[in-house]
Image (cartoon, rainbow, N blue to C red; front, side):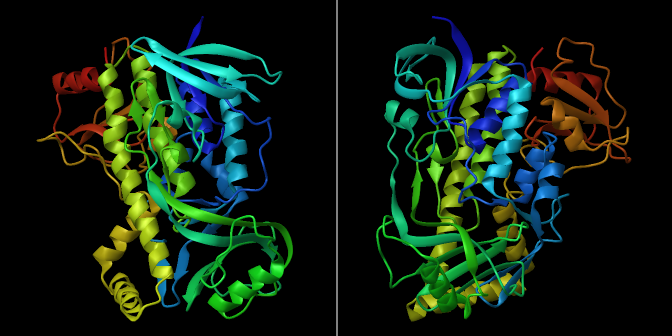
Length: 479
């Protein structure tokens, strides 16, 4: 049985980004999807945060997505709190409202162009692994079964992950909120702010524009707790919105409505042997904060370059352990923050309402607290652990910066390589030229930084001679 280096299971945003990254890096990759080839124009996710837009910029996709979406630089939360994103230290100082299916289309085009082997209507029915590789049992479109081998498998197959079940990982957590209603509608009256979130008594509602004449509405009524299968009509959507926001803005012409429940769950490990979990297969959150798709895309960006390094023989397999140590804490943090937003929205008892008012006041008046909250919400505030004694930049997100040749850092990252930025440049004569792009700062910066393919600093030094740079390249990129 011939084995492909990596098989990705699941063709949502997480799987598409991961597979596209691997193929771009020259790693043969097969993407397995049990559904027919069809990108649905109905999806719950619809927000891209600043850090995710930076990752998409590093793949040459952000500008087209920005043109198709709706930028929001202010959020109004719980009536009195306005969050201004215009001061974010990012090229993307805003949220982008854009349906998930538009993101999937862009990621799929990139993956196809990079040479990903797509296998639709192919369902994973079993998985075994040993120290040498992984074997998947699959059922194809004609119902016949087969075995396909891989060096590594990534389960990006959603909340009900077959891959997660096959490697015996539980998915502990709980349902947080039931009977949330969702609709894409036209409005006769426009809200005062582009993105509106509010809660009154036993209801909350959220409204944001798609930019194509439709608005996304998500609403919840504590008093109407019914199963997901309960019929839903526009009158119910309007009623809950009126409860929370005081009016329904003349909602009409719903093109999609759905009722769903929201869970908080996280797998205890994102890796078992040669099998990894990413996206909703690894963690699910409440929709508050729009974190789900964004967190999954960040998982993919973190794992893809590490797999490429190991499969290419340029790094030891232990590098893959850092996927767990870097991404699992982020998933846990997102669970806490998104769950906290929902609990604030659901506040009913006097002490809960007092706590919400106090937190709103703190966020409104204490700049460090507001910056921390916005950094976590947008993803730009996360950093990864660095070795003891490392330069303070190590493990931090490197913002987009101008380079000496007139380009930007995130343009230099589009090749999927490490980027070494130095004051004078560095003539790398080794065999790693296909894995490292060497650039110079446009300004007089003296710090030398080795930027990982996912835009985080692998190593930095304020005064680095040739020997130090060579040692860093050997340690992080290989020979």
